[in-house]
Length: 254
Length: 163
Image 1 (cartoon, rainbow over the protein chains, first blue to last red):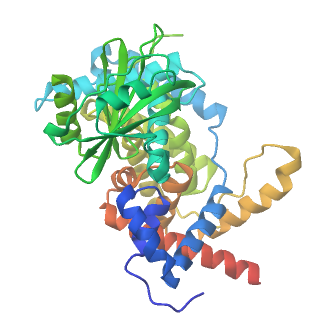
Image 2 (image 1 turned 180 degrees about the vertical axis):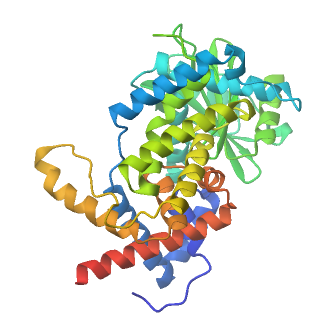
């Protein structure tokens, strides 16, 4: 083991390893690690610890326990008034109750509609993270002009994506790319928001579309989703929730 | 499909995570069963206060609190502790069992506050923010616990190999 003193960047190296660092800082960190022996050792230890832990089993629930919990909950739910088991709106805000109901219906929707395929939200996040990690894949057509970006998608996706310029609102368009989510080609627009990136995913709305989630947080990313012009529009970003909401407002105002 | 309440749906969706965390925290199959049962009933009672964001982290927080309370009351010695491992294929079984035992033994020696962070991050794949919520600590604390845990784990593994 090394006697090198701890480098103050250690926890950042770890955050990068855990996918918790934004792309800009991650890039700067790569340069630091290249010349810091301590941080190289840290990277090595992180990889080793992960290899060890991934060999650990994820225990599966014994059938007996599962049955007994189902019985217990069924009994508890039946014995109380059905409404008392429903999430109630708190006095602070009816929104909480609405959000709880939405979360519950999300679980239901995922269980009913996509029993085996990984859920689309998680795929969007994974796609977004991949695009940030591979700088080159963030954008295939770099342009701030929607007259350039929109035609570029022709022939690459089987729909005409909405492309809007929001530079005047503080969200300059950086370009676009095509990605695959849930087995279909989707268009992705990339906007800059200060030091952050907002990715706008779009695909045609299908008859069997799962219920939309207006906004949610997945793995630390904020997401907002709506229907517009026959398309599902899904924004994902590490922007704060209220900033992303502002982005949606500006977008929809155009 | 019989009619289920939203809470039942939530419980079903996150039962695996709940059980896995309980099992790794208390390291005893029977005690883990108790912890999960108890946690689910508590969660049902607290459900009216649940604000609908991140059900898994919310539920795991309850499991974790129940598990730690039980641990402080029960003295799980290493003799009783988990030695049972997951079986999933005859060929890989022997090797995997060895790996599993080794990880078990190494993790067992870590303080529980480091162990829980490692399990939540590496097996449940929670984000820092979610872990912070489950263990009720600031994100900075989670980060330093993760690092301490990982370092101790790697050092212990190396020491074990050297013997």
